[in-house]
Amino acid sequence: ETGVTQSPTHLIKTRGQQVTLRCSSQSGHNTVSWYQQALGQGPQFIFQYYREEENGRGNFPPRFSGLQFPNYSSELNVNALELDDSALYLCASSPRAGANNEQFFGPGTRLTVL
Amino acid sequence: AQSVTQPDIHITVSEGASLELRCNYSYGATPYLFWYVQSPGQGLQLLLKYFSGDTLVQGIKGFEAEFKRSQSSFNLRKPSVHWSDAAEYFCAVGSQGGTSYGKLTFGQGTILTVHP
Image 1 (cartoon, rainbow over the protein chains, first blue to last red):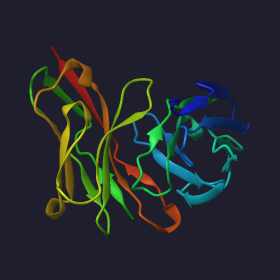
Image 2 (image 1 turned 90 degrees about the horizontal axis):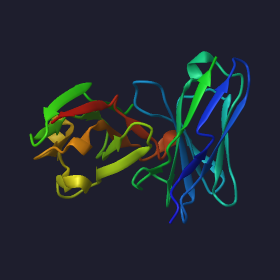
Image 3 (image 1 turned 90 degrees about the vertical axis):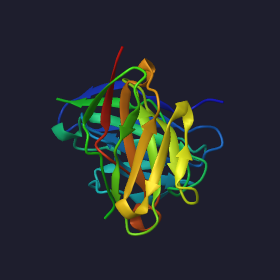
Image 4 (image 1 turned 180 degrees about the vertical axis):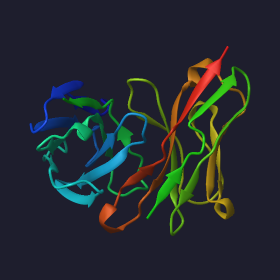
């Protein structure tokens, strides 16, 4: 069984640019959540997608957007990058929506904004 | 709003010693509680979870945690630490509804160092 995978592993962008991060969920999982983990901090919830619809969102501006595809893989898009967007971005999949389902995390994408 | 506090940023123990990592949460109802571990360069791995029932929960790698509603705590324990337990540990509470459905709120994390 393949776990959650994310690409790319590392990424360097400059301020004002746009970035797309990708996540493949674990087999049989229809829910994907995205988290931002700044250095020395715990992960912060960005949003959750369930069956291609956003069904929960944290305190992030609209320039953070996402998609979920019919195969339940997902993308996180960030527009107009700012220096504070530098972080580890974690994707997690779960078999169903809701916080009472274990979320399986990928290894993350390290984004550096210069 | 829900929140999680891990009072200890860094803990150092000797191999073979017992361990307790503290976690306090704030949540309006019965919480869904989790402990995750993160090794350098890795994602988060679930150690254990509490939804309801027995307040002492067993997890993987010999870890256990006790839910104490009166203290709003969910402390993680291990009777004998191994060098491979060195990592960062995160406590989290799960949202059960509203606009942040499915959200996990994490604490700041506790870095565990194990001395031989």
